Image (cartoon, rainbow over all chains, first blue to last red; front, top):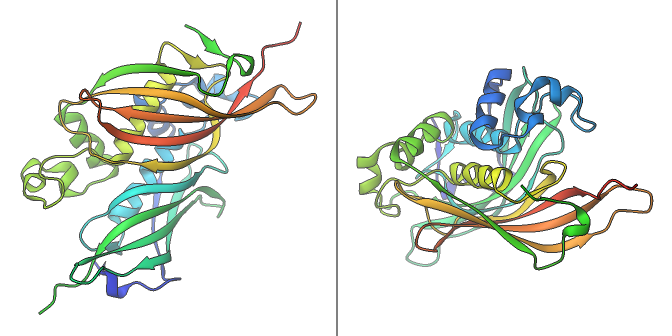
Length: 151
Length: 151
């Protein structure tokens, strides 16, 4: 499994992970634990909702599934995924039962390690799409990325 | 349970929810499903980690628990918590086994419904603190908030 160090990153570099499938049972179970609103937990109530028109995953479930793809894909960042924040987290459309999600990660900005330091920073845009190529989530993560160990 | 409509909101209004307790088993179970990195799943590996020095919850677990407090507190928004995005999501320190989390929500900006529309927008800063009053998460949510039904 390729592990990307700071030297491997260039602005515009991108990679993919997934797909991961999402079932109705998954959506309901997550929502019952963390976001127990009827449009996330009750298919009938969700079907009648003026906006959702059917069961929709909690946005935080979409975020958690996207993290699973980011942390568990074939290409990952070296040193673990350690950041101090997320910007511009958006859910332009809901995840539905039966969806299959794919994550695309793209480097959008880099800051090299300070002199004498082993860790730089990368801003990475993560875009989650469903099986129809529709975007269900986007965010920009600011992450710590180590250099390769020096000989 | 008070349900806040748009007319009830003023910039600076705030309310609290919680606490919710977090166990080591909770932290490991969430991470195994969504963020399987050793500093979230393995207490021994986490204890040896240069940064974490002990098991730390996934930031997405902290976010999900904060959502549970926001959606399930004594005071909640009318009409469900429906937003199109989150900005400035930060995790200044990790959640640890045994922590008890409290959420403070504060209205920071309001946009009244357009003429003829029943729904306005609020920007709400949600700050999650542990039992020592230390901030473990902050974010700003942009949310749809309905007016009271007109007679």
